[in-house]
Length: 140
Image 1 (cartoon, helix red, strand yellow):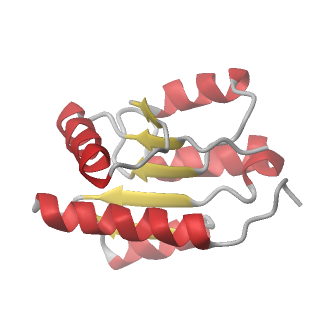
Image 2 (spheres, one colour):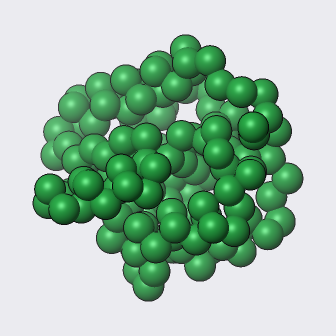
Image 3 (tube, rainbow, N blue to C red):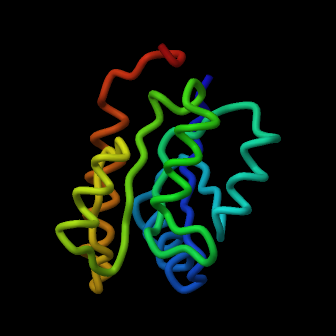
C-alpha cells in the first residue's frame, strides 16, 4: 500500500528548506518526509508500513551514495517499491551517471535548478505527472 508522502532524501539542509518553500508555494497536500542519509532511509524502511508516493533522492549522499541506496532498496525491498517512482536529483551529472541511474530502474534524473521558479516548475511537473499516472494499487 502507498501513502501520499513524498520522501526527499538529501543531507543538505539548505536544499530541504528550498523544497519546503516550493511545497508551500505550490500548496501541495502531499506530506514531505526528509531523510538525510542512506542509513536513515534503511532504518526507516524497517519500520514504515506504507511505501511513499514518490522518492526523490540526491545522488551525493553522505556515506552510501544514492546509487548504492537504490541498489539496496531494489535488492531488499523490491516488492514494496516496485511501483514507487524513484527520481534522482543532483547539482550535476555526467552521461555515465545518467546511464547508471536508469540502469538502476530510476524513473528520472533531474538537475537541481539554481532558480527558485525553475525548481518550483520542475517539482510541479514531477508531482503532476505522477498524480495523473495510473499506478497499481499494490506491487505486482
